[in-house]
Every structure is written in structure tokens, then in C-alpha cells.
Image (cartoon, rainbow, N blue to C red):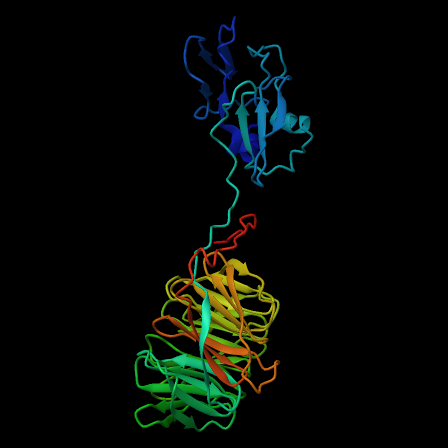
Length: 473
């Protein structure tokens, strides 16, 4: 019995025991007997509790509670259950001729089987006559933190010039210009301040699906559905390197922030790591069973993250070229992954949900539900504004910390385009994070900025606190 008590009820054996109200007339004291020790409480003293937490229970039949002991369920707002053992006020003394009930008898008396209760169940002794109860209260219910207020974003410029769907967009590190790739097989460089076209680069023979500007060298990298990955020298505006190896359309690319390597992902279900200088293929990251739609790099571990149409996200070991973690929570294709610029977290976009994850092991944080469309792109800034762009032309803006959707945008298509041509294929913030650029199916680039005239009074947070989200860390 002692072994059983210790293994099954060890966490609740040593609890504070409440004494009876000593202010009743005729009360001469309370003697509680635990084995060989006795604790006497005189009526003149002011002590309120007999604390037995440091004294072990005797190896006897169980806890010494009388037959008059009643089991009550404590009123609690939390989901966790607590048992309260209430002493009747008529009991002023523990009589020795009563039969002691074991812990199992207590559970059976309450109509609860012994096995149905977890071993860590909290038992609290409380007074029925007073308002005092033990400090061992139930855990507080999880609450949803109040979202931070963000000003709404408004459209203030539409840039046209491409003759096909604008599939990708990137801003250069100096924040002077940005580059777009399109289904018209061209790469165009635009002035960020004025929105005027500066340069057009031709060379791809199919849709350009990815562009990125290097912060370490004057190079622009592009990839497309012609299986080609090109390195452009921006001093001569010419292609200086080709990276051969992909067997099908190349859907995305990213540069490592600290090492001179380029990572590309393709419809051939692989991601490839290239040495920028030698054009050599360092690793072929195989493991996905369908097209790899997006890839991201970071300096910390894991250094490479891929999202695929096989509904999984993989975190890769760059040195070994192998998968560290495979995340299988999504039920549909993962087309977008974005890393938070300050926190060690990232988000992934899929038609079922946008999910937030914690590095390095990909622990799930929370779902951002409500954008029920094919999500092509995600972007996040340092203020915690997450943007998701979808195939049907809708753009949702979220508070990163709480997952609160504070704005929904559906911009009108360019005159002359069909209403069905309102998809958002790529989006990104400029380096100052004051402008949001979107690449769209109506052949335009739309530029958004924060509404300066908005305040918390004009655009209040319509937040419902009854929604409780459990964050998992």
C-alpha cells in the first residue's frame, strides 16, 4: 500500500491541511494523528493551518479522513479539474474509533474510479464555513493576448509595363530599386521612389519564377520554368554564370546570408545548393515527393527550409545535405514560407491554414485561419505585420503575435484585365518596411503604404477575447 500511495498519489500526498474554525465555543483543540506524531492546536492561538507538507504519511491504510468527509468539486473557470475535500463544521475532533478511508475509498465515494484520475490531480482542503481555501489553486485558464494595433495599408501606386503575369519580386539591399520577373520572359528593374522602368533584361525563354539581389556582390540571380538558373552581373547587365542540373521548372531561389551559396527549388522534387563562384552543385536535397514550391535560407540552424506540394515542410542540415525535421501538419500544398526578421520563428502558407512555427525543431505555435484560398506568398516586417497573398486576388494582413486578422484587401484589377486575373503571386516589403509591393496576375505591380491618417479611434481593433488559442511551445 505504501508503494502504491507513493507511485500513484505521490504528487498529492503532502498537502496543506486546513484546521477547523477555532472560534467556536467549547472547542478545546484539534488533535490530528499521523502515525506516531500528534499536532495540538490550542484555541487561543491565531494559527489558521496545520501544515503537514514536510511530514510523510504513515505506511498505513491511507489518508486519515473520517466517514463524514464529503467530496466537493471546486468551482473553477479553468479546464483542469480539482477535488476539494471539505470537513463538516460539526466535526470538532477526529475520533479514534472511526475507520480511516483510503485514497481509493475517497475516489469511490465520489463516484470516480481510481484509474480515471491522473496522478497529478490537485486535492485541496477547504473550510465550508469561511472563505479561506488553500493556496494550491487550479491553473489559470489560457487567455488570448490583446492584439497590437497596426494602421491599415492603402494602395497608392499601380505600376504597369509587363506583358504577362508578374510572378516574382525582390528589393535590392540599398532600397533604390526593385526587380520583377514575369511570364513575358523578361526581368525588369524599376525605380522604387518614382516607379519608373530603369532596365529590362532578356535571356530566359520561359516564365521567370524567381529573382533575388545579392547583398554581398553586385549580382542578380533569376530562375524560371525553362529549368535555367542565371547569375546576372549588374555592372554589365549580362549573364555571367549558368547553374545546370535541375530536370524541370525551377520555382524559387534564395541566397544564404553569410555563405556564398545559392539554393534553388524545382518541380523535379529536389532543392539544389550551388557554389555561387564555381557553379558547382554542392548538394542535391532530395526527400520531397512532389514539386518544391518555396525555399528560404537563414544563418542560424536550420539553414535551409523548403515547402512542397507534397504538403510537408522540411528543415535541412546544410553541411550533411540531409533532412533534420519534416513537418507534416499541413493538409494541402505549401507554396509559401517566410522567416520573421527578428524572432527565431517562421510561417508557412497553405490553402488549409497559415501556420507559425518555432525554430530550430519546427515546434508548432499557432494557426492563422480565415484566408481560405490558395496562398501564393507571405511577407512579414519587423513590426509584426504578416501579409498573405492569394490566387483570388485577396490579401490579408495579420498581427504576427496573436494571429489577429486586422485588414482584408481585394484590389481592383487593371482596366482591360479579366476579373479572374486578380491573383497575387508575390509580395514583399522594401528595406525601410514602409512600402509593400505585390506582383499580380493583371500584369501590374501594386505599391501599398500605411494610412497616415488612421488612428486607433478611426480603425479600432474588433477583438473578441472569448476566442482562446493554445500556443504550443
